[in-house]
Length: 291
Image 1 (cartoon, rainbow, N blue to C red):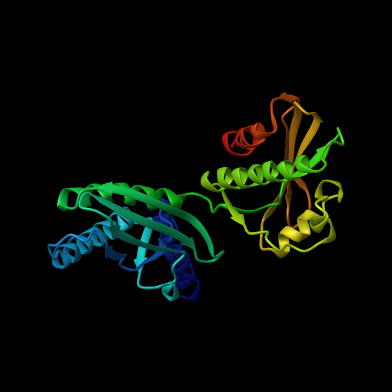
Image 2: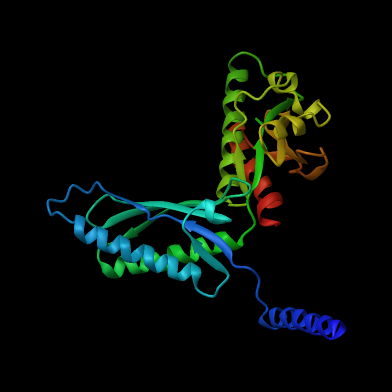
């Protein structure tokens, strides 16, 4: 009798396993989404509060329906109810025909943004709101499926001047052009969606203060880790002559210090003000488009 019960229990367990396998289902991923905020700064004389509340309510209902459709995701009331992601947003009407929507998706476990975008859509009627919802739902779904962006600490680009000509007014312009390079590279990597740029302002370390990370044998990696970054990037502009230069960069794993990627532009011709374009092109080719 006991043996028969054991066999029946094993059979029942096998049935459960087979049913799950045939269904091909995994536990639905929890998504928390509160109603988006709405602000009207269009200064139109007509009171449209009721209409906007109705359209926003319809917008949120459709967005929740689209995300929950198919069973891959389940809408939960809050992060405390088992949400893996949190979706937040707001819509602002700026004029009669123009509205903006700011949407962000947060990975709850890592506390990282997997999406943070600003959209604009024209019109303020039922049809325009429906079009906006369809587009936003596609964007949110893509963000939920995408891997979380890598937290990247991009340190200030450094100048390796082989001409020893950076004195006086030249040194000031060099610093300005280097700052443009750093800002532009951070913007390009951040806008790609693959990276979340970590603020390195005030980062400690003698090498950082001396602007000599390129010669510190990987000391930038632990600095980046302390800042909460997954990876670090250092870059250098090498000036061979007043009209010849090259770029180089190196990416390390912040935890291990291992070199993950590096790139070099080779010798280029041009004035100092072209540094920004060349540096952005190099990191875009090697770190964004190549992936």
